[in-house]
Amino acid sequence: MLKIIGGFFLGLIVVSVLAYTYAGSLMFREIESPFGVEETVARIQQNIQNTGNGWALSGLRNPGKAVQNDGGNVLPVMMVEACSTKYSGPILKDDSVRFLSILMPCKVSVYKKNDGKTYIGMMNAGLMGKMFGPMVGEVMGEVAKDQEKFVQFDPSKPAPEMIKGTPGATGGAGGGAAGGC
Image (tube, rainbow, N blue to C red; front, side, top):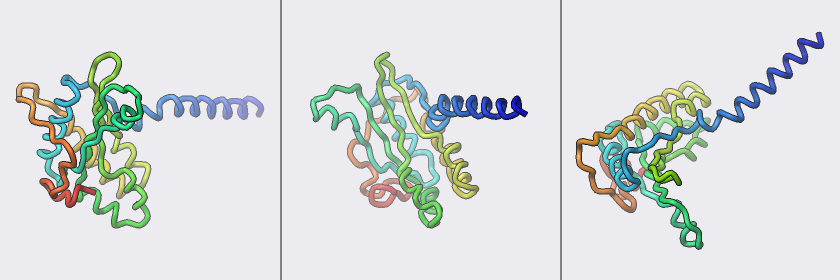
């Protein structure tokens, strides 16, 4: 009996260590970009506009700017924000999952690391959605498919211009009204 109890607790400890070690890498994705920060941002913005499914740009933020304004020095970081009312609508209409509005708009982070390379970071929408029931799981599964399209680049095509400011403020393509959701 002592072996069974000991094995149970050892199993709990192993699972806890594994969850602590790998949870972050499961919830978020990081991929290397073949381009610099601004070109990567511009290509992601263009891909969002061309994805369909109601996606519209809703903002572009530079979270490192506040640190720089406070006297700090950080490598470039840009956050592309986009929203699709096709996907946000069902979640915002349902009282039981409306708290997930904290995840809106969808954000894609583009940043440089000390190795000099540019990276793209984003939430693993498909996995996150599964934690909140079938409706959210289905919606976020579709978001995850579209996110894959956001980060597929054709290097043979010239880089588009980066859209600065609040791109969706005028409604944008696909119905992101008044700056998106």
